[in-house]
Image: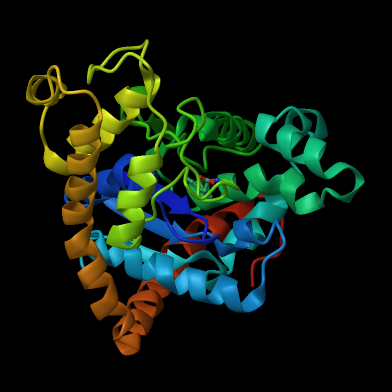
Length: 330
Ligand code: TRP
Protein backbone atom coordinates (compact mmCIF):
# COMPACT_ATOMS: atom_id res chain seq x y z
CA UNK A 1 0.00 0.00 0.00
CA UNK A 2 1.19 3.49 -0.86
CA UNK A 3 2.03 5.62 2.13
CA UNK A 4 0.32 8.98 2.51
CA UNK A 5 2.48 11.99 1.68
CA UNK A 6 3.37 14.79 4.11
CA UNK A 7 4.96 18.09 3.10
CA UNK A 8 6.15 20.93 5.29
CA UNK A 9 8.83 23.59 5.37
CA UNK A 10 10.54 26.22 7.48
CA UNK A 11 12.13 29.46 6.32
CA UNK A 12 15.86 29.79 6.95
CA UNK A 13 15.52 33.30 8.31
CA UNK A 14 17.55 33.04 11.51
CA UNK A 15 17.78 30.35 14.15
CA UNK A 16 14.88 28.13 15.12
CA UNK A 17 13.17 28.62 18.47
CA UNK A 18 11.94 26.09 21.01
CA UNK A 19 8.52 27.02 19.63
CA UNK A 20 9.53 25.66 16.22
CA UNK A 21 10.88 22.56 17.93
CA UNK A 22 7.93 21.79 20.19
CA UNK A 23 5.25 22.93 17.75
CA UNK A 24 6.63 21.65 14.47
CA UNK A 25 9.84 19.71 14.10
CA UNK A 26 9.27 17.30 16.97
CA UNK A 27 5.98 16.44 15.38
CA UNK A 28 7.60 16.01 11.98
CA UNK A 29 9.96 13.48 13.51
CA UNK A 30 7.05 11.39 14.72
CA UNK A 31 5.45 11.48 11.26
CA UNK A 32 8.48 10.15 9.40
CA UNK A 33 7.92 6.49 10.31
CA UNK A 34 4.36 6.38 9.11
CA UNK A 35 4.30 8.69 6.11
CA UNK A 36 6.29 9.54 3.03
CA UNK A 37 7.57 12.90 4.30
CA UNK A 38 9.14 15.82 2.46
CA UNK A 39 10.68 18.53 4.61
CA UNK A 40 12.08 21.57 2.89
CA UNK A 41 14.15 24.56 3.89
CA UNK A 42 12.28 27.19 1.95
CA UNK A 43 14.93 29.69 0.90
CA UNK A 44 12.87 30.93 -2.07
CA UNK A 45 10.28 32.07 0.45
CA UNK A 46 12.91 33.64 2.68
CA UNK A 47 14.02 36.13 0.02
CA UNK A 48 10.59 37.78 0.01
CA UNK A 49 12.17 39.87 2.75
CA UNK A 50 15.68 41.30 2.33
CA UNK A 51 18.40 38.85 3.38
CA UNK A 52 22.12 39.31 3.88
CA UNK A 53 23.57 36.74 1.43
CA UNK A 54 26.17 35.26 3.75
CA UNK A 55 23.66 35.00 6.59
CA UNK A 56 21.09 33.34 4.36
CA UNK A 57 23.63 30.71 3.32
CA UNK A 58 24.70 30.12 6.91
CA UNK A 59 21.13 29.97 8.21
CA UNK A 60 20.09 27.53 5.50
CA UNK A 61 22.80 25.05 6.46
CA UNK A 62 22.09 25.60 10.14
CA UNK A 63 18.42 24.82 9.73
CA UNK A 64 19.35 21.68 7.81
CA UNK A 65 21.71 20.63 10.62
CA UNK A 66 19.00 21.42 13.17
CA UNK A 67 16.48 19.25 11.31
CA UNK A 68 18.96 16.39 11.58
CA UNK A 69 19.93 17.15 15.17
CA UNK A 70 16.25 17.13 16.17
CA UNK A 71 15.85 13.65 14.77
CA UNK A 72 14.79 13.90 11.14
CA UNK A 73 16.40 10.97 9.42
CA UNK A 74 17.39 11.28 5.74
CA UNK A 75 16.96 7.51 5.41
CA UNK A 76 13.29 7.86 6.33
CA UNK A 77 12.26 11.19 4.85
CA UNK A 78 13.30 13.55 2.07
CA UNK A 79 15.07 16.66 3.32
CA UNK A 80 15.98 19.31 0.78
CA UNK A 81 16.72 22.95 0.12
CA UNK A 82 13.91 24.48 -1.94
CA UNK A 83 16.12 26.41 -4.39
CA UNK A 84 17.90 23.16 -5.33
CA UNK A 85 14.73 21.85 -6.91
CA UNK A 86 13.78 23.82 -10.00
CA UNK A 87 10.18 22.64 -10.20
CA UNK A 88 9.05 24.84 -7.31
CA UNK A 89 9.59 28.12 -9.13
CA UNK A 90 8.27 26.58 -12.36
CA UNK A 91 4.97 25.35 -10.98
CA UNK A 92 4.59 28.57 -8.99
CA UNK A 93 4.64 30.48 -12.27
CA UNK A 94 1.85 28.37 -13.73
CA UNK A 95 -0.21 28.71 -10.56
CA UNK A 96 0.35 32.48 -10.57
CA UNK A 97 -1.51 32.65 -13.84
CA UNK A 98 -4.44 30.92 -12.17
CA UNK A 99 -4.50 32.95 -8.94
CA UNK A 100 -6.85 35.86 -8.45
CA UNK A 101 -5.38 39.17 -7.35
CA UNK A 102 -8.45 39.65 -5.15
CA UNK A 103 -7.92 36.46 -3.19
CA UNK A 104 -4.19 37.09 -2.78
CA UNK A 105 -4.80 40.61 -1.53
CA UNK A 106 -7.10 39.24 1.18
CA UNK A 107 -4.38 37.05 2.74
CA UNK A 108 -3.91 38.35 6.27
CA UNK A 109 -0.17 37.73 6.31
CA UNK A 110 0.19 39.80 3.14
CA UNK A 111 -2.08 42.53 4.48
CA UNK A 112 0.00 42.79 7.67
CA UNK A 113 3.28 42.92 5.80
CA UNK A 114 2.12 45.32 3.11
CA UNK A 115 0.71 47.65 5.73
CA UNK A 116 4.13 47.84 7.34
CA UNK A 117 6.01 48.22 4.05
CA UNK A 118 3.63 50.46 2.07
CA UNK A 119 4.75 51.20 -1.51
CA UNK A 120 7.91 49.15 -1.17
CA UNK A 121 6.09 45.84 -0.69
CA UNK A 122 7.49 43.44 -3.30
CA UNK A 123 5.55 41.19 -5.65
CA UNK A 124 7.13 38.10 -4.08
CA UNK A 125 5.34 38.78 -0.81
CA UNK A 126 2.11 39.02 -2.76
CA UNK A 127 2.58 35.67 -4.48
CA UNK A 128 4.22 33.97 -1.49
CA UNK A 129 1.21 31.69 -0.90
CA UNK A 130 1.22 30.63 -4.56
CA UNK A 131 4.79 29.37 -4.22
CA UNK A 132 3.71 27.60 -1.07
CA UNK A 133 0.88 25.93 -2.99
CA UNK A 134 3.41 24.79 -5.60
CA UNK A 135 5.58 23.26 -2.85
CA UNK A 136 2.68 21.19 -1.62
CA UNK A 137 1.06 20.20 -4.92
CA UNK A 138 4.27 19.06 -6.58
CA UNK A 139 4.50 16.10 -4.18
CA UNK A 140 0.79 15.27 -4.21
CA UNK A 141 0.82 15.85 -0.46
CA UNK A 142 -2.07 14.44 1.57
CA UNK A 143 -1.18 16.26 4.78
CA UNK A 144 0.52 19.54 5.52
CA UNK A 145 1.48 20.15 9.16
CA UNK A 146 1.40 23.92 9.76
CA UNK A 147 0.59 26.46 12.41
CA UNK A 148 -2.74 28.21 12.62
CA UNK A 149 -1.18 31.26 10.93
CA UNK A 150 -0.72 29.27 7.70
CA UNK A 151 -4.27 27.96 7.51
CA UNK A 152 -5.41 30.63 5.06
CA UNK A 153 -2.49 29.81 2.77
CA UNK A 154 -3.52 26.17 2.85
CA UNK A 155 -7.05 27.16 1.85
CA UNK A 156 -5.59 28.93 -1.16
CA UNK A 157 -3.62 25.83 -2.10
CA UNK A 158 -6.83 23.81 -1.93
CA UNK A 159 -8.68 26.36 -4.08
CA UNK A 160 -5.92 26.27 -6.68
CA UNK A 161 -6.05 22.48 -6.66
CA UNK A 162 -9.77 22.49 -7.39
CA UNK A 163 -9.44 25.19 -10.01
CA UNK A 164 -6.71 23.31 -11.89
CA UNK A 165 -8.39 19.93 -11.58
CA UNK A 166 -11.71 21.35 -12.81
CA UNK A 167 -10.27 23.37 -15.66
CA UNK A 168 -8.15 20.50 -17.01
CA UNK A 169 -8.61 17.10 -15.38
CA UNK A 170 -7.74 15.59 -12.00
CA UNK A 171 -4.01 16.28 -11.58
CA UNK A 172 -3.33 17.31 -8.00
CA UNK A 173 -4.37 15.70 -4.77
CA UNK A 174 -6.31 18.04 -2.47
CA UNK A 175 -4.06 18.66 0.57
CA UNK A 176 -5.37 18.58 4.13
CA UNK A 177 -3.86 20.86 6.74
CA UNK A 178 -2.70 19.24 9.98
CA UNK A 179 -3.14 22.24 12.24
CA UNK A 180 -1.43 22.13 15.60
CA UNK A 181 -3.67 22.30 18.61
CA UNK A 182 -3.65 25.71 20.24
CA UNK A 183 -2.55 24.20 23.56
CA UNK A 184 0.75 23.10 22.08
CA UNK A 185 1.59 26.52 20.76
CA UNK A 186 4.49 28.29 22.44
CA UNK A 187 4.03 31.98 23.05
CA UNK A 188 6.50 34.83 23.60
CA UNK A 189 8.08 34.86 27.07
CA UNK A 190 7.47 38.60 27.12
CA UNK A 191 3.89 38.62 25.87
CA UNK A 192 1.76 35.48 26.18
CA UNK A 193 -0.66 36.80 23.55
CA UNK A 194 2.00 36.73 20.83
CA UNK A 195 3.46 33.64 19.19
CA UNK A 196 7.11 32.98 20.10
CA UNK A 197 9.06 34.22 17.10
CA UNK A 198 12.71 34.59 16.23
CA UNK A 199 11.86 37.86 14.49
CA UNK A 200 10.65 39.39 17.77
CA UNK A 201 12.58 42.63 18.27
CA UNK A 202 12.85 41.82 21.97
CA UNK A 203 15.12 38.80 22.13
CA UNK A 204 13.96 37.98 25.65
CA UNK A 205 10.72 36.84 24.03
CA UNK A 206 12.19 33.70 22.49
CA UNK A 207 14.60 30.87 23.26
CA UNK A 208 16.55 29.40 20.37
CA UNK A 209 17.21 25.67 20.11
CA UNK A 210 20.90 26.61 20.13
CA UNK A 211 20.61 29.05 23.05
CA UNK A 212 23.39 28.90 25.67
CA UNK A 213 22.45 27.67 29.17
CA UNK A 214 23.13 31.04 30.83
CA UNK A 215 20.97 32.85 28.30
CA UNK A 216 18.19 30.33 28.85
CA UNK A 217 18.36 30.93 32.61
CA UNK A 218 18.32 34.70 32.13
CA UNK A 219 15.43 34.69 29.65
CA UNK A 220 13.28 32.42 31.79
CA UNK A 221 14.05 34.47 34.89
CA UNK A 222 12.84 37.57 33.04
CA UNK A 223 9.78 35.90 31.52
CA UNK A 224 6.56 37.71 32.42
CA UNK A 225 4.23 35.99 34.89
CA UNK A 226 1.26 37.48 36.73
CA UNK A 227 0.28 38.65 40.20
CA UNK A 228 -1.73 35.55 41.09
CA UNK A 229 1.34 33.72 42.33
CA UNK A 230 0.17 30.16 41.74
CA UNK A 231 1.48 27.60 39.25
CA UNK A 232 -1.83 26.65 37.72
CA UNK A 233 -2.86 25.78 34.17
CA UNK A 234 -5.70 28.18 33.53
CA UNK A 235 -6.96 30.62 30.93
CA UNK A 236 -6.64 33.46 33.44
CA UNK A 237 -2.90 32.87 33.65
CA UNK A 238 -1.71 32.82 30.02
CA UNK A 239 1.95 33.47 30.89
CA UNK A 240 2.10 30.63 33.42
CA UNK A 241 0.18 28.38 31.06
CA UNK A 242 2.84 29.03 28.44
CA UNK A 243 5.72 28.27 30.83
CA UNK A 244 3.95 25.10 31.94
CA UNK A 245 3.52 24.04 28.32
CA UNK A 246 7.27 24.39 27.81
CA UNK A 247 7.97 22.53 31.06
CA UNK A 248 5.67 19.71 30.08
CA UNK A 249 7.05 19.46 26.54
CA UNK A 250 10.64 19.05 27.73
CA UNK A 251 10.03 16.95 30.85
CA UNK A 252 7.05 14.81 29.83
CA UNK A 253 5.33 15.80 33.13
CA UNK A 254 1.60 16.42 32.94
CA UNK A 255 0.15 19.80 33.91
CA UNK A 256 -1.33 18.18 37.01
CA UNK A 257 2.07 16.87 38.09
CA UNK A 258 3.55 20.32 37.67
CA UNK A 259 0.73 21.98 39.61
CA UNK A 260 1.20 19.52 42.48
CA UNK A 261 4.94 19.90 42.56
CA UNK A 262 4.80 23.71 42.90
CA UNK A 263 1.69 24.05 45.03
CA UNK A 264 1.95 27.01 47.39
CA UNK A 265 5.46 27.93 46.20
CA UNK A 266 5.11 31.01 44.00
CA UNK A 267 7.11 31.25 40.78
CA UNK A 268 10.78 31.43 41.72
CA UNK A 269 11.54 27.73 42.12
CA UNK A 270 9.30 26.84 39.19
CA UNK A 271 11.21 29.18 36.89
CA UNK A 272 14.60 27.95 38.10
CA UNK A 273 13.60 24.35 37.50
CA UNK A 274 12.05 25.18 34.16
CA UNK A 275 15.35 26.65 32.97
CA UNK A 276 17.16 23.43 33.91
CA UNK A 277 14.51 21.28 32.25
CA UNK A 278 14.90 23.25 29.01
CA UNK A 279 18.71 23.19 29.20
CA UNK A 280 18.70 19.44 29.73
CA UNK A 281 16.19 18.86 26.96
CA UNK A 282 18.19 20.89 24.46
CA UNK A 283 21.64 19.57 25.41
CA UNK A 284 21.60 16.41 23.25
CA UNK A 285 20.25 18.38 20.27
CA UNK A 286 22.94 21.03 20.66
CA UNK A 287 25.56 18.30 20.93
CA UNK A 288 24.42 16.58 17.74
CA UNK A 289 24.15 19.92 15.99
CA UNK A 290 27.83 20.64 16.68
CA UNK A 291 28.87 17.24 15.38
CA UNK A 292 26.83 17.62 12.21
CA UNK A 293 28.07 21.14 11.51
CA UNK A 294 31.62 19.84 11.77
CA UNK A 295 30.90 17.27 9.12
CA UNK A 296 30.34 19.37 6.02
CA UNK A 297 30.61 16.35 3.77
CA UNK A 298 27.72 14.63 5.51
CA UNK A 299 25.58 17.77 5.30
CA UNK A 300 26.33 18.09 1.62
CA UNK A 301 25.45 14.46 1.01
CA UNK A 302 22.14 14.88 2.78
CA UNK A 303 21.04 17.91 0.79
CA UNK A 304 22.24 16.51 -2.52
CA UNK A 305 20.48 13.22 -2.03
CA UNK A 306 17.33 15.04 -0.86
CA UNK A 307 17.33 17.37 -3.86
CA UNK A 308 17.75 14.50 -6.28
CA UNK A 309 14.77 12.63 -4.89
CA UNK A 310 12.62 15.77 -4.66
CA UNK A 311 13.48 16.80 -8.21
CA UNK A 312 12.62 13.37 -9.54
CA UNK A 313 9.26 13.11 -7.76
CA UNK A 314 8.16 16.69 -8.38
CA UNK A 315 9.17 16.56 -12.01
CA UNK A 316 6.56 13.89 -12.65
CA UNK A 317 3.85 16.27 -11.49
CA UNK A 318 5.28 19.22 -13.40
CA UNK A 319 5.42 17.24 -16.68
CA UNK A 320 1.76 16.32 -16.28
CA UNK A 321 0.88 19.97 -15.69
CA UNK A 322 2.83 21.19 -18.70
CA UNK A 323 1.16 18.63 -20.93
CA UNK A 324 -2.33 19.45 -19.70
CA UNK A 325 -1.98 23.18 -20.19
CA UNK A 326 -0.88 22.69 -23.77
CA UNK A 327 2.87 23.17 -23.70
CA UNK A 328 4.77 21.23 -26.33
CA UNK A 329 6.29 18.25 -24.56
CA UNK A 330 9.92 17.77 -25.43
N1 TRP B 1 4.93 29.65 4.89
C1 TRP B 1 5.41 28.66 5.82
C2 TRP B 1 5.74 29.34 7.14
O1 TRP B 1 6.22 30.45 7.14
C3 TRP B 1 6.61 27.92 5.30
C4 TRP B 1 6.26 27.11 4.09
C5 TRP B 1 6.62 27.33 2.81
C6 TRP B 1 5.47 25.93 4.09
N2 TRP B 1 6.12 26.39 1.99
C7 TRP B 1 5.41 25.50 2.74
C8 TRP B 1 4.81 25.21 5.08
C9 TRP B 1 4.67 24.39 2.37
C10 TRP B 1 4.09 24.08 4.72
C11 TRP B 1 4.01 23.68 3.36
O2 TRP B 1 5.57 28.75 8.17
